[in-house]
View 1 (tube, rainbow, N blue to C red):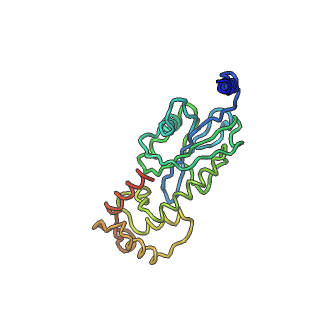
View 2: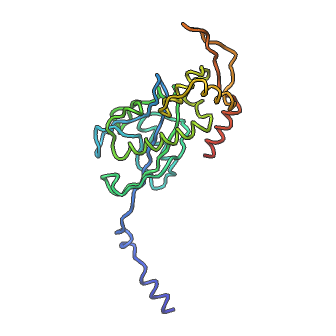
View 3: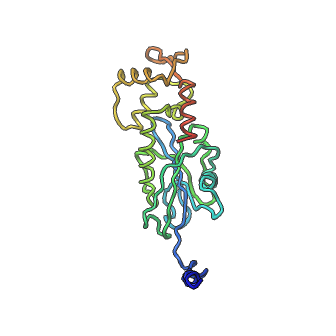
Length: 240
């Protein structure tokens, strides 16, 4: 009993616990889209300190009683007007001095969106602007957001090479040349046309749509992603 009393007396009181430093938790969102031959990422211009008037990823603090994924969806909606997007957890960034406000750890999420979502983007109450930027020609960014975007880009490249993720970057029907352009822009490398087509068709992730596109040159076949490939990718997204 004496031992128990001593141990209890050694436990910190409420005031001592409050004196302990506590890290804060934020979320940051990386949204990619492909348009006009460019892979673009959604950025917001910050209204408040720190990094006022600087471009950054959408994001913010997680509420004390809020689920992290709910905070991600909320911040995306509040700062950009974008809603209804599937967000995949990317990575946790926690360098001690990454945020001048103190010890702030962030959980990053990323998504790939089409034209319907691109058009939703607008400035929110805590932002002065929201716009899409070529991921290879970014402005100076707040915090460590350049590192977060680079990490998300590496994840995108990896996924593109082994999944049917390209269906999120293209319209419903496309030519193989348009598909190759997406791969070349994302991977940042030139691909041999003949080898690329042979590999893509052998994978069975695309199928001929039964249509031709006419232009200045000979008609080009239109393709679409196979339903089975899209379903498999949808399952992967639900269980990444």
